[in-house]
Length: 242
Ligand code: PEP
Image (cartoon, rainbow, N blue to C red; front, side):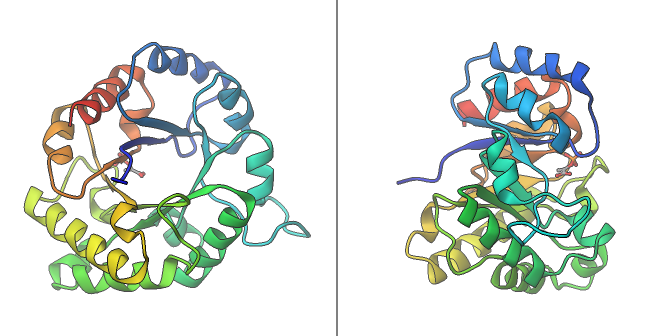
């Protein structure tokens, strides 16, 4: 089984009910890849009801309890989510999430029947210091639980310095990290060769095709350009054609 191609949108803390009209435009276009939108949690139910695969942006590691403001994986599943983004760099930075916490959340997601999209990525300082491959290896080892399979896990390589900046790594830099991730996953998991690997960080219509041509890039996690069908549509089309 080859990894499935996935164009995943991360709306972050953007969008109200009015933004759901973008989904109609996205759904109007035939896609030759899986398409997923991860909106703010309050929009998941309404978005899923439109028939588009929908994901959360985080979940708690516990199944229920006294955790004000948090959302359990089973609650995401209950309102129609199929996926959940975990360990995004904004959560690692804003909420102090560690690899251990991300792994526990991924385990909870799997137990609830959700696909975990686990994010890894180096800071600019780490890249400048030549530590990128060590950082990615450590994040993969620490953030991906032992129960991960190609069916329940997707990995997104998102260099922190490329998120929302308009800057992207070179194609060679993306290729180097994706080859490393494929090697590490294949060494650890029986079906590691089939786990979908996404690139994320300033993917736009203008750079999508060349990024999707890089070996072991099976799709993208897209922030800003996923908010408008006019931008996300061409990215979906580029992945469909890749
Ligand atoms: C993201 O936040 O996951 C992301 C990739 O953002 P952007 O596409 O806006 O850089």
